[in-house]
Image 1 (cartoon, rainbow, N blue to C red):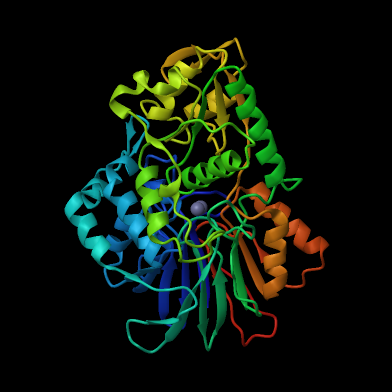
Image 2: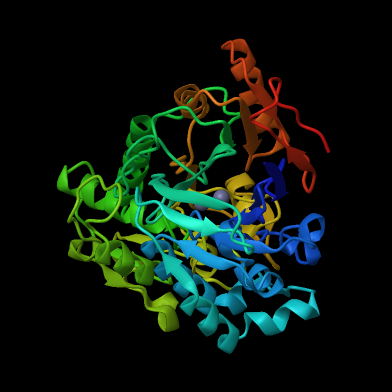
Length: 462
Ligand SMILES: [Zn+2]
Ligand SMILES: [Zn+2]
């Protein structure tokens, strides 16, 4: 058995894990890097360029897991593509919008050779090629020579609609790849439902591994409630920049819950962007996967469409409202960005930052801004006069949940990925402190690690 992390080692972005079992080679995820504009936009395929890939299996449809699918599918034409059904449908929205994938703010991707395969005809064919599989229903992945058969099974991972961990079983041993996961209920998506038995090799995400204290969802909920009440009591509106996939749906449902509880006033909710399309898929699959309230539909929440063409004439400037927009990182030119510029001029308005802000993005500059002081917001010199507060509603496992997944599977080896080095090493340290006896690997990107069930002290070597 061989494993090589081609992207997502000591970082978050361009996730892809190569796994070879016997002569069956497959890749889990085909992500793009949210920041990189050069060749590192895609996973590093160099170490596996001689391989004949049987399958590319997608854990979920965030772009750091599917954004480079056109490139991987093009590079490995023998690979069959697999995902859950919701993941395929969301991928359709994300990839059809793929020109956006190639533009970051106003900066286009600077790799000419990739541009063609992100055009419509290739994307349309690609989408037809994705085979969907249900969770907990094993399917077989054959090596190209038919000499090795690997049984693959999806397991609900929480996180977002369609997200799944992948179990691979064969005579050579078992591997479980968590993908991105969360072991607690959010507001729409329920918690992960992973296999409950020994696994030889575990590959787990570590996004939140460096958090010293777990963030309490209830405390964050209360803080956001207070923030909304402070703003609306002063006749202001609240802007919540969100990501169209996951954060938008969870925040929309949270607003609905808070209004139903009378924790915040019942005021207009305005939603916009691609997030609304994703909401439709959340509703189409309202009985699928891990759900907090199976059957609940987001369309039943009273909401108005963001007037994208007349943003500055929206009713939110006249009457207290809650506005959920994309982009989550407030990239220049997006509705989030344009509205934030207007929000900042109004001392009684408030911006609630609920998602991760990359240090290079406009949202990060806004988050760091000091009230009443000038700062650079994209190309604009802004002064923030409105209120602003940061909240954390992570869809990723806490460190404690990562440790308990390792305990649950008692693997011989664990690979720590999808996290900065600090996050992975904190998880490694905690595992050692808890007496974990297996081998811990914080993989180097592109390095091939070998593992054999038959050798007593399973060895990893380059
Ligand atoms: Zn994700
Ligand atoms: Zn991810």
